[in-house]
Image (tube, rainbow, N blue to C red):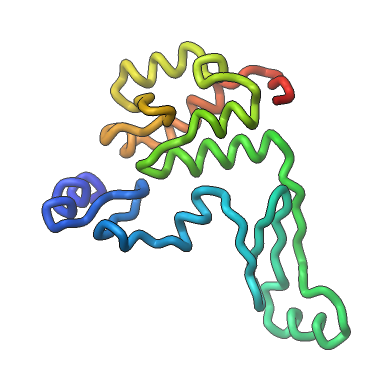
Length: 168
């Protein structure tokens, strides 16, 4: 189905801007692009999620619990998470590779202090030789074939990371 969409939709004027998303140029979903770029967002209401800097949080899912917390003058937040360097790296990799613009090598370097070649070593060369990934203009991108194997590519890259990452 995805292969068909990748063939048919461009003929109809739609561009693929994310692994599973197509839009007419200029009509991409800015809301989702913000998520995929790890941009900040504030969610209001029951079950709403928020993300800012190195923190993520979510409100009570059940509307009655959410409203009861507010009525008591308490925070409606039910879940809080601090995003450490390792998780930030994993999210940056996974989300960046979903975008057709690709994963910024500069962003990876700022998180790790290493180049993509130092981070991924021979795995990068292997994935490139298999036609799954390309490096162009400072971005690591899935190829059209790589899009079909996106989870595999991300898993291989994560598995190839050095045991210890230096502080950037």
